[in-house]
Length: 463
Image 1 (cartoon, rainbow, N blue to C red):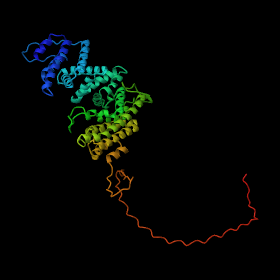
Image 2: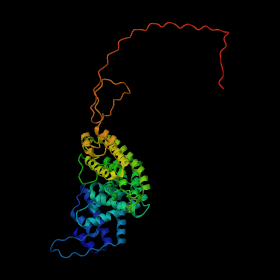
Image 3: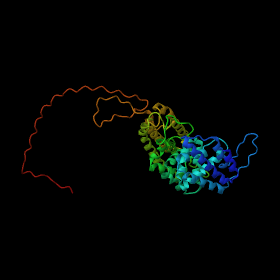
Image 4: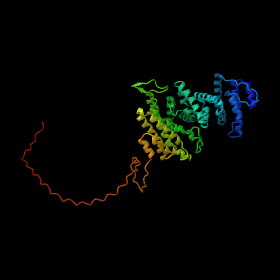
């Protein structure tokens, strides 16, 4: 690699970056012929950092001065992005594409990571604009194996480009749904982590919300693509994205009524006190986004109902919680804080809607095997929430019925629990049969009225 570096130092910045990609393609193509998964060593990574990301090479003591690296101007950077897009598009071997992409953009924990992430955001944004599917597929794999903090940065770059800077550009991002569903699934997972509704600034933008809901409502199985196409162990690494965005989407649906009510401008003497916060939607926008969250909630419940069969097929039923219990604990704590904060505003309808959605999601997730916990765990976690009839029924669970020898067709035993604090009543003993009453004697017949034909009937019409 040292000989290659010396030759690259004599080139201009753009041709040097292009030459690095050429040499790495030859290097890894030959490596893949001998081993199925070559290890990316330090040499290629250093070349990429120096000539693609313009990070100065760190040399040991006594090595002499390092010539300054020529920097890319804005036009050259755009040309480099086009070269990279074309390279990944023209490389026919997916294994080579994946290892080159990983060598370029896998975080190394050094100063070059900022330049690396900035260039990655621009490359994926360009791939979305010109629909370069191989780049999007490589980005989907990168999101799956990269720590969450970097995935969130890429998601933020795409949201800024397509949902904030240019009005209407979200339509370009929306169109990749059919081109790369795998990238869409990973992107949804990333934005649900980014926008966790913990503050007003972390509520998903309207354009992003509408796009995500339209994707999922059109095909709810979209959010299961990563789970269905990935070899899975019973335990997942900590600090990486979840296999599905289910827990993040549940958080959106449940917290939305309370989070949007919290953004309502304060009133003083019947008038608005100051201006709404930057980016805060008016009341009409909040009302229009309510049906979006309802559609999203319905789609999430439909996906949860599909999971039992998939978990059983993969032999993971009861072993893998796709809706982690600790995420639900954090969600319940967040709802409790929001409900306490909104109590002076008398947001009873919003609290009721949030708790109804929470109860439905918990019940369906437990029934599908996606949430691994007991009713006692739920009862402990939800004990500090405001009272809700549906949530009370979910955390109590159905009453266990005694086994019946035979039940008539169409008979369903009751499933409702008795009110809390009242024990179930024991069955009453059978009442004794009443004695048979004696028959009444026959009554005498009434005399027959005789007919007198000569008597007039005193009829007078009512006037």
